[in-house]
Length: 64
Image 1 (cartoon, rainbow, N blue to C red):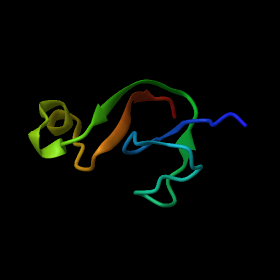
Image 2 (cartoon, rainbow, N blue to C red):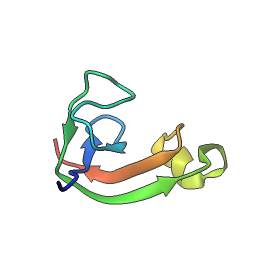
Image 3 (cartoon, one colour):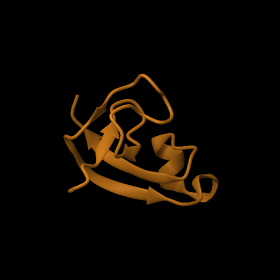
Image 4 (cartoon, rainbow, N blue to C red):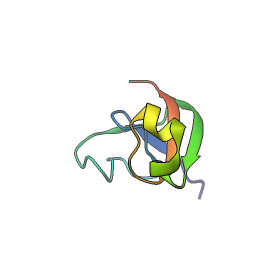
């Protein structure tokens, strides 16, 4: 079975779940484009500018 990757509409975290594991009730979308993987958010300029505080894969753009 093929896995469908989804992105949270609020924080852009990429997951396979229908709800965001960080925000709980926030729905995720299958319409997202590009991604960045952040391993050490405290040392990353990209994470700082994007407001990312947790390590993980994040979508660059998520359609609502």
